Length: 153
Image (cartoon, rainbow, N blue to C red; front, side):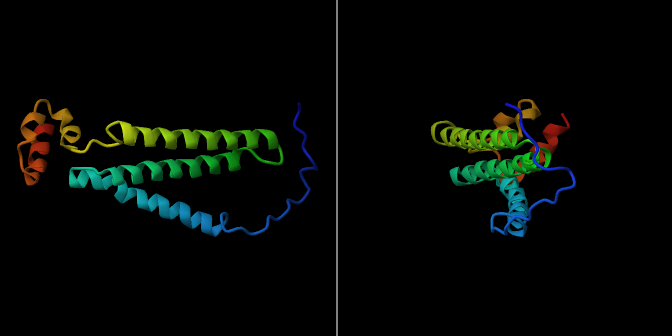
């Protein structure tokens, strides 16, 4: 079935009614979520460990951030006036993918090791070629010195 364009290019667009999930409230939420991701992602690497709560916050925040970004892309590049069925299909596909990813992250968090390993020393020092065995016995203050030493090898 062909999609039909109603009206002409010169017809005015109807002004939508204000809603709290759109406009400035939505924009503010997007920016706040983006700013909140910075300390969420940096915290496990600064502290050297991760917790299930932090993993859950990182996982859901990144998925919600991605969903909002892809939804904005669909709204911007698939106009409802020109491709109403395609836009609706893309939005439902995005919703289904978001739910599937959230379920996958939940399953990974509950039944597997989680998003980040509990001890990040193995992850951080993986590239230093054999230093990870000795890193486990080091105190936390010496991690930076060992990291610099291993990078120079």
